[in-house]
Image (cartoon, rainbow, N blue to C red; front, top):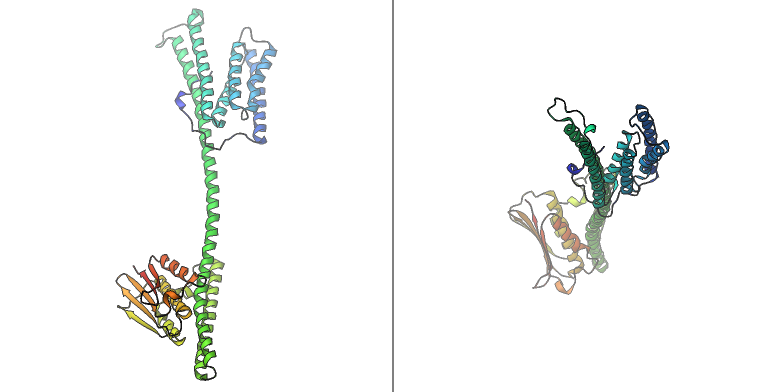
Length: 431
């Protein structure tokens, strides 16, 4: 016989939108094979138990055949209709004993598998528990009725003999314990299988989510890399091309009356072109190397230009026709390479905007202040100020400056001054 599952407790709840059922053809074939194997085992067992004389008046052979089919046959559909199969298996189990079919071994397997399947495969956990409780309570009611019947028939009880516990009580307790273990094992193993299936499903979902997150991260990394490349190209090209344009225009205007000044301007154009080509080649080489082996950019990449080149910017702007002063305030000291690179690029963009937008005759000042825990870069000019938008182009210059400052945790102020001209002031932490 079999036992109660009260000790096993409840099971995990149904996960929204997920079910173990239905299953595929492979699982249905496995269930059909299991049913055939158990049917054969039941037939052999009935023959052996009949030969042993389990009952004085066993059931006719055709009843035995029907109950073999009734016990084993439903298991072929156990994962398609688990709760129905459990009820049918319980009724067939009871009929096998009531009709005195000589079998007492494999019918325990068929009922166990049916109850296990309800716990392991039913997504509706409330109905699964209700069906199992119904079967278990029914079986225990039968067990207690059988115990009471044996106690009511004196000849059916074993002799008391000289024992601590009367034999009929020991027999009854043993029957109850066996059923408790049997039904408890069916309940517990079914719930454990369901819990494992839920955990596996959640793991598969997390795996899919992680794969999707990796795809998103990879796409985001590509987008960020494109932005970085665009920013580097803007920084490298915009300054030098702007300077070349200003100098070429100056050379054109004085070519007839001042060949020497025109030659000087063309020399600046030539130098700017060479510098731009050199920085482009160096940057593209860095990108190619990083793409080939995934290593970080070398320290001589254009993005690591330091504070030492700030005077060159002031000189280049002065040569282009905008008198530009450069001053350092405070005691000079080494700063982190990233901060130095950001400072240089912001100064380069600000000076480029002076050349493009400040107007003729405007003066610019470039100041670098060393503060206790930061450096402050200030680029001002006396040009058109609010009357000429400094973002009249694509706006990438201002966006790039803000992004660079944010990357190192600094602050930046960009805009026209009240007394005329334009201001770019960046505060960059060094600690």
